[in-house]
Image (cartoon, rainbow, N blue to C red; front, top):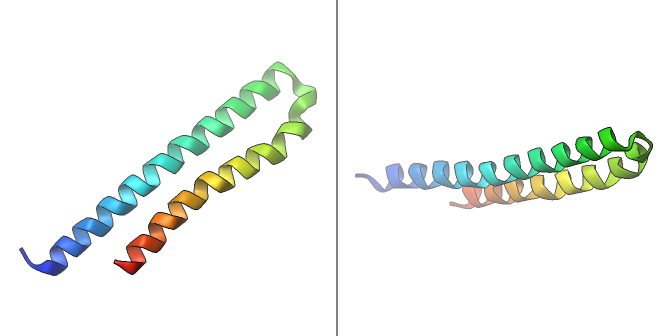
Length: 72
């Protein structure tokens, strides 16, 4: 196989693995936050900002994998 084919395969695997982890993490973060708000509705304002920060940090991992793909 050609070198360019291997480069495309490496990029696609990097994006697949780099996207699955943050997607699962964001789903778990939002799920637990909604569960906590469902149990105690008054805590919605207190949980919203930390939930968004956690989702943003998890999404940063996907952005790192995108940067790696651009450098390959």
